[in-house]
Image (cartoon, rainbow, N blue to C red; front, top):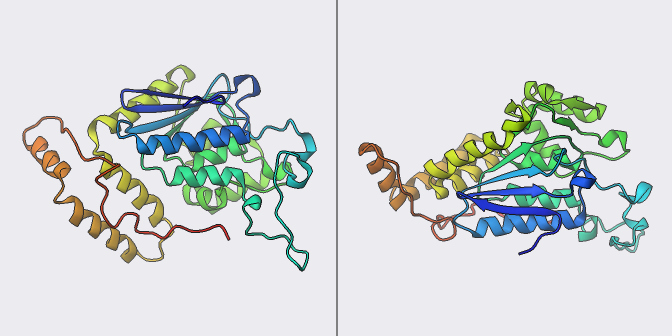
Length: 298
């Protein structure tokens, strides 16, 4: 599949997705959104891909939404390229209509459902959707010249892309509110101190660092185990009792305990050799997966 605003490159079982509008600081468009969602769909269907890295071309990761429409940028009704929601008989907007849905949220919900681990390699400025899209990724590594900003309050809008769910879970409510209230742009060192990112490295070491981590996962971890672990960890953030985790842990341990991967993993450990895992995400997920009921937008 050909893409115009991203690059899709697979090497050594690692998919690198590069936001590719460098002359526009990789600002976000509907076309980029569609291509990113397609890329994550494609990656989930490809058993050869064991990990995903997302980065930006040029000197930015993503400088937020494309503002070329000026003051109309976020006004659906004022843009010829956007659909608007119908009105109900009482004159109110039909808030459950698909046209109301936030585009960034469509992307982060897709990343949230990924069956592959996702690493953000933040190579430069990441503001607005350029930052909130990262919150559904698992690990964020930044170059020391990267900058971050939840700038929504300074544009008169609100944090989007489901960030009101993701951000407090990652950094805590007080830090989330400080950054989103102020809307200021801050340095990578502050992002690290606030636990938004896990590591800061020199710019020329960024992709190598991300690839080293991705490769460690790709070479050593069972893909089905990773797919289950990713969903277990993320979805248990919203559970109301540890019993919910116990239910899923128990089912996963019971199912995986009889799997070929587990026999191989234990045997390889005892024989002091690398394991060769053969179970596939496309074919060997447990019959109870997914254990949650997908939510509708309504």
